[in-house]
Amino acid sequence: MKVKTVVLPAAGLGTRFLPITKSIPKEMLPVVDKPLIQYAIEEALEAGIEKIIVIDSVGKSSIADHFDIAPILEKELEERGKTDFLEYEKRLGRMANLAFIRQKQPLGVGHAIAIALPLIGNEPFAVMFSDDIISAEPMVLKQMVDEYERLDSPIIAAMEVPNEMTHQYGILETGQEDGRSYKLTGMIEKPPKGKAPSNLAIIGRYILTPDIAPILQGIDKDHTGEIQLTTALLELMKKRNLYGYKFIGKRFDAGSKIGFLEANIHYALKRDELGDKLRDYLKTI
Ligand code: G1P
Image 1 (cartoon, rainbow, N blue to C red):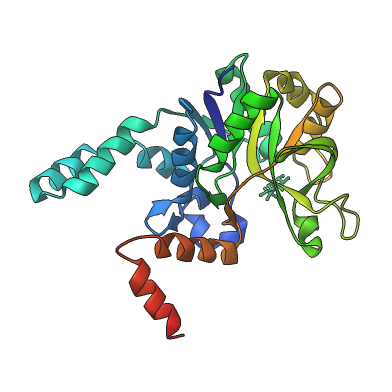
Image 2 (spheres, rainbow, N blue to C red):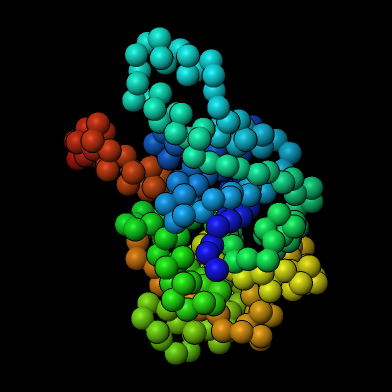
């Protein structure tokens, strides 16, 4: 069955980016001139996604405004002859059909996905974290949708990280290899230092199947007070094969300040109008 829906959890407080996240949602922080969440949405659209469900929280309405039409702006751009941006703005308004659900308690990603389930129905769906921004061609969600069609099983994006970083990620325990995918034998959310079963980390792209629904609705909070997606995936693994997919692409942890800055430099260097100037500037420092 085709993957038509994506869930984008966007309800977190963004404490790592305080003070800016007091008034601007983390998902709206710009990488060059587009908010982080727009990179994820463009990636979803490239993968053939038709329905986008954003899980937001109080103070995050600028996300909905950003993807709405902007009649006054469009009129102004038309009058000024700024056709490039106008076309872009119109396409953005048309391209993304977004639904928003409020997560009223900070209960984590597992809970965020659980509240989206009634809008999805009995079909596979994707989950993307917009602070994992990945430069790739084809983009990573498209790679994963193709892999899902081949394996017909839930798939988790994975990337090797240095041993000293494994405690910051969900870590996969892998069995048999199948192309770029690995059949999973276990996983653990943020293992203590030195206790990781591998250095293959979960990155925020998943293709899930509807049989995760009853599991998500039944699991409890962990020691951090959150309902973890990783806990639900472990349960699902008892019932069917799950795969970790080593994607092709360069990933930035835009949830950290350094990763966010690196992403800005990466995407700016790729822009025709900015690349040379930025490269010249970087040579001077
Ligand atoms: C989440 C997941 C974790 C994953 C990470 C990737 O953690 O729970 O398994 O490795 O995203 O970015 P977070 O970074 O939200 O704490």
